[in-house]
Image (cartoon, rainbow, N blue to C red):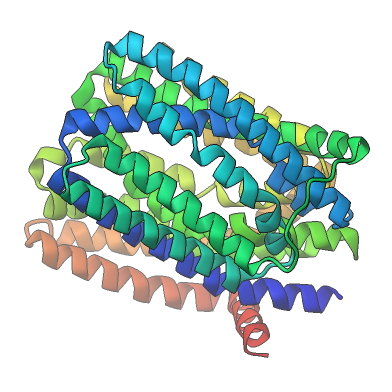
Length: 481
């Protein structure tokens, strides 16, 4: 059973990676259309309305999809109860959106915000109707169906955005595109579902789903609020120009992080929940995952930090040079994030969601307090505080792994030590190359740095950690079976 589960998970990884790549391409296409046809004021109005709906959705979704994936039983009564709860909570969320839209219209003195928010809130029941069927597909790790659903829905949304923006719909283009994406996703997931959900409700199942899902929702809400609140405070204290540089740095690093973690976030909970239901031991999978993820992602984020100056200056121009130190700081902080992703998935699979809420609360508090504490300092210190929340949480994550998985500190460190040593050798070689060719053209130095870093890291990893390469080959072999 464990081998079959691992094989299914490995087979899902390329689909999830392809989905992440498509999301990046979709984002670039949407940005091009918005920049071509929509004015900044129209974008601001649409973004405000959609942001209200997204924030309400984090609350009204109540973590039900994750609760179904993690549930011990996939009985139809469980999924039907989740479906009824999702619909009811989404309707309550739509009412809340109406009140928030009315408040926003008065606050910003813009009458457009109320109808835009009301229209955007229609996405709540559309997304809720597909939540339970999508959770069943995710639980079964039906990667191909889920990826095709997402791609089809995004293509429909991009088509709606292109057409309505070209016709001059202004802010309504973004709202209609969001609704088109939600509607397309719902149609595709219901078409792929083996069984359509029914209006059946069991109070006992509802209590179990809400007990776990509410904690998932709390964690997500803390993440959303901390990022939005930090951005507002950062812009208030340091100015819009500094906020723009910070946002560019955040986008560069977060997109790379999403590409790396997309597959795990999509199917990792399904994998570890299934292991909990069958074999129960996730320690070996955790250590192997940390070793592979460190080997794959640490050089990526170290490379972003090393090449930030040349890349940003060459691609975006000298006016964005102030974003370079922000990018370097945030990229380095990402190196230590991925073990937390794995322990988060395992704790969620075990029902220990309270621990993750505590992590999210401490990270949010640290970032906001650090922003207030550095208000009179240069903006770089504020960005360091934002990135520092990851370093602040690192010891607590290590203790959680020791407590809940029983993995000694020595083994935790050992799983990542050799890949990190290979990254250190790569970084030293790239820095020496950059100093040696300090006056070389940017693109030439950038290309040379990438080529040298790739060769040095590959050779160092092979020499220092052949077992990592063996794990990677074993995964490829499982995929080919």
